[in-house]
Image 1 (tube, helix red, strand yellow):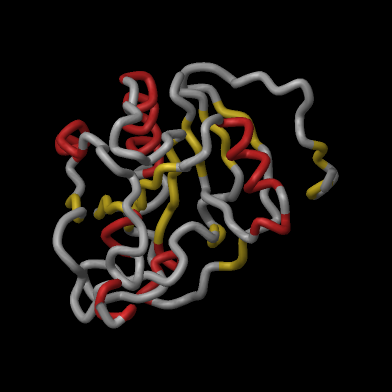
Image 2 (image 1 turned 90 degrees about the vertical axis):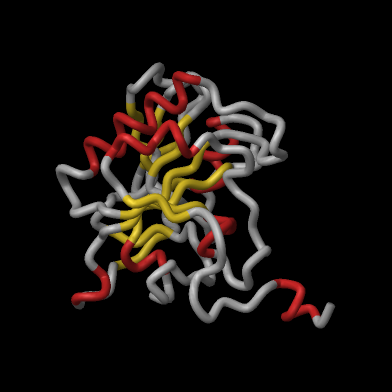
Length: 196
């Protein structure tokens, strides 16, 4: 088993509980670039397509996966933090936001929701409540203004669908601009890239 920063992956696994955190650091992160276009103002919501919080935390803990998110929220509202919000997690991949800014990882916080991302698996109330509380807390640390989906920012458009079936209306009262529909400017469609 990999050991990251002296931390052994917890066994046996126990979800921390509703709105409770556990730190399980990921080696998959980097420094945020400096500059006016990299102020952390965006939060990207993802779906894990992995069935449990434990399996997702293990994927982010494993260096070979080359992926991470700042936070993962389980269906019961348990929260695992894998990367400091002052560092750049590897969650968005090749991406562009609605303002035309590339490399969304540079200026965003990534939050994964445990969900199979099939459009049928529900997002339970405790999970959404924990996400809402987390967003409120993060706005005290960072000037977050925008909420978006992985689907909306992934290049080419159509490469990702997460978080499929997420009830965005449940976040409308948080005072942030929600960008989850349409295509960001200058974004190629997957069909165009594949020549269909």
